[in-house]
Image (cartoon, rainbow, N blue to C red; front, side):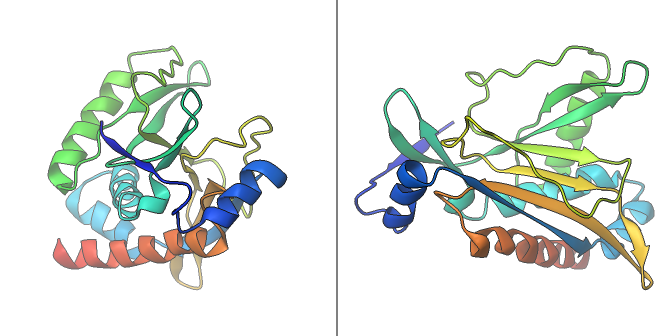
Length: 217
């Protein structure tokens, strides 16, 4: 795990960062539906899990820009950018109606990521404890699937987390709309390091990644 320290005086969002860490401490989130028809078809054709295929593409997107890999170190008051961020996702246990955290390491190579993340999921199915170790896994982002509903909006509140910078991504059940399969995705980021443009860019990049991924595979 490596990172670079951002000089706050030369940071290209200097004024925005100061305003939203001192005057107006807040986060911002956006929900939009994206077309996952092609990815669903690919997953069925290749007998792979749609969930892991989407998680891979999401990880690609969030690792494509420094803006999505930012963090704040409380003990040193430093704004940093990780070289890589990894997904922290979840296994839901039907019998106990609880979740277990799953930490998977990001890899640009699809087959490597898929095989490792699948192994992580299978291992987590045998656990029943919810453990989050921020010291062991500092460079992570939260990726949470909500398979029970195709929702229209979702909001994650962090009343004491005004300096919490890792992205929080949720997505729900896809549904057919006008012959296409549309899936709700929610992106939450700290307003100090991201605005509407950067959040909207996540959706744009996701759709481009999906098209390119299907074309190449």
